[in-house]
Amino acid sequence: MNIRSVISYIVLCLGGIAANAADGSTAYNFLDVTSSSHIYGLGGVNISIIEDDINVIDQNPALLGPEIEKQMGVDYMRYLGESNFAGVRYGMAAGDHGAWAAGIKYFGYGSMKSADETGVVTGTFSPKDICFSASYSHDITGYLRGGITLKGIYSSYDKYSAFAVATDLGLNYFDDERDLSLSFVVANLGGQLKRFNETYDRLPVDVRLGFTKGLGSIPFRISVTAWNLTKWSLPYVDVGDGTSVAFEKKESFASNLFRHLVFAAEYAPSDRFYVGVGYNYKIRTDMSTYSRSFLSGFSACAGVNVSRFGVGVAIAQPHTGATTFMLNLNMRLYEF
Image: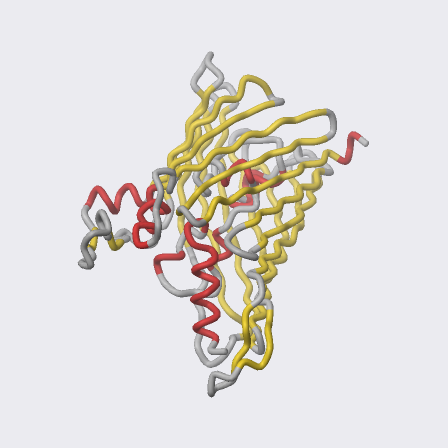
């Protein structure tokens, strides 16, 4: 089977949960899929949320710290058809001001038929992506922390395989007294060391800014995340009410602005419980050529911490044919 056909299928599988899926055909859109149910329920992108959960470092290595000591996080998502995403991550303190973590993420896209150049089916294969990661962070000041994640990415699609390396760089400023968190991330810097064929597949390099603020005496906090900042123009095709075959290209200032922003709100009355919602306008507009529902672009999450464990769940419906669920389990092994 042609490698471009396989990549197109995987991009379709990722659909609205991959940040840059509609911005170009690349085999590495899966790098934009978060492994945190908390973040997934807050719109899929959040680099500034402060939480005692190792899974949230997935999108910003600067959120890793010595407070995440001997934690193990496990995540699982069931998506379109036979697609399954799963991962595990473990972290430890490195002195009083640093920490490290290592993890692996697996993306399986079900079974596909394999065919030769004449179209004769020769069997089946299961395309998959695997991402190995190692992260390190260190306090720069009492308020500022920096972090780096190195990633090795292996992909196997039928008779084709590839290997790439990538780096995430992050900064986080956190003022506990003001309950204010500000973050900056450069994600997916790198490239392919081994290509599928003679064509080079780019990585979804991105620059992101994040803001999270608690609302004083009431147990709410809000987040705004700006992403896809390497490219201002993010036009999309609108099919309207579906009664016309003519598509309308949308690229106004307001449309571009909101496609760069993700909004989220949380209610967290204690350290043991939270519930949150998110809105991602880009996901909603990316789904305009599919069977978009009223809930497209919205997501929700909830989590509880009991004894040595934390459990988080998230749900979203990018389009009517895909209601997605994500489950996280966080284990504080130092308490055992």
